Length: 605
Image 1 (cartoon, rainbow, N blue to C red):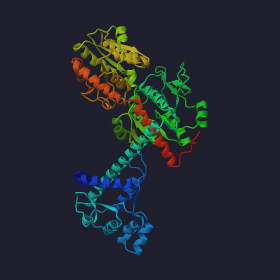
Image 2 (cartoon, rainbow, N blue to C red):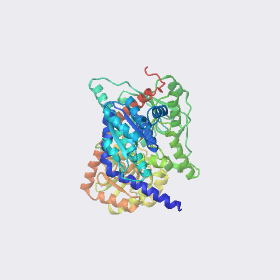
Image 3 (cartoon, rainbow, N blue to C red):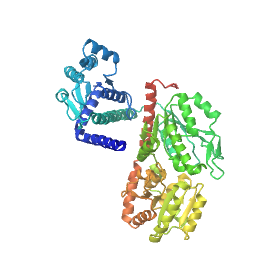
């Protein structure tokens, strides 16, 4: 026997059987509606079966009462095949055919649902349960093979998998069970969110304010560092405080910088990453922070990095028994070049560190939809992942005045101005951008402004001078965040060549300023740029990238049209909406902790 041929044949046959289930999707949808309507009306779901089908019944009940993929209230479901005392006593005193019907008679009520799983459709104890359900006014769903057998007339809804072999039917049943759980879960999660939103709006309308939360944010980077993560945290702080919450930042000290008096910031001692890279790395010991966290009520901890102060935040979340949130901002394996060790080892370790950290978290937030898939495929992270967009202050970037910047750099009216804002680091792929700009400028007189600072700034300047003898590439160095809008106001187009971003705020800010985008297609850009609508996505090819830029700069109407679409896209990232949802998510997790009787912090005071 050729094992490899057998393996291939079995996998192909199983895949085909599951695909054939598409033919019965209307029956699956009917069953899902029956289940959700029953639960919504206060009913219960009973599930029964024999052998492998008994295991499926148990599995299904566990997914309903526990969790399939989303956090939501428990859904009432009972597998009738798990109580060994009931099974044996009923079999002994009555008959094995009555083991499910007798339990259903004791526990079931009109409005409940019975799901009977039988690959043949002829299991006598399942059929007897269907009869009893009919007497009690309980809706019935049969999950069978291609021939439903006697279940054809015994059940209200039939899900008949179009397969003959028992194992193939069982495999398809497992998929259908997950689908039914997923539909019900999404329905009730949406219902919970709608009720929470209605409650919030009612409180708003009556002038009531919800109880303010005390939120501790742990981050390895904060002001005066200028970066997308820092900007995200600062906006989060502002909008959460605007909602009435108290936000406390725990971050590394930055030599010579003093925090504004109105910001609640606790600084940890720090050292620079290297002599060359002046990035403060925290030493996770602060008596002041420890005293504050020990003596005050903290409702939730939100970490923005999975190590150093992220570990410190996780330690306090466990100690206080409160929810731990983590926002996945960075693909750390893409930054392995900063660690002077074998790169494969660093990348492997960085992924394992992230995976281990997420196991401690109540919720993992990712600001990009593509990152949800990446977390599953590359990190093995599937639980408690929530997609939530990054926010920007759209008002600060709307229709900025760039006249002063144009005058400062002597831009001519006929010149097209390209702009990039970001950290000057190897992973930003700027040599690619500089090389592409040579072709762009040869076809369309342009200048390129590159804004930001970082360890590679001087190397990039040197590379540009060697490849741009006319000096049409301008490195501005550090620009204060409040001044960035004016630079966007002086530009015609934002370009980005990095492939390591998660959700770059600079790209969103440029869109809010009315700039279309041309970017190399990767996670961060593909989540935001609608190719051909508000910009272009290209492969990582210099000629392809340059050609898209040239084509866009050469078409004034298209440039303006894409700029308007970019503004519309940016409006979807309003802080009020996004951080309102974050507050609700905090509240939900805090309430979940309370329901589970594991919330040990004082609820008042």
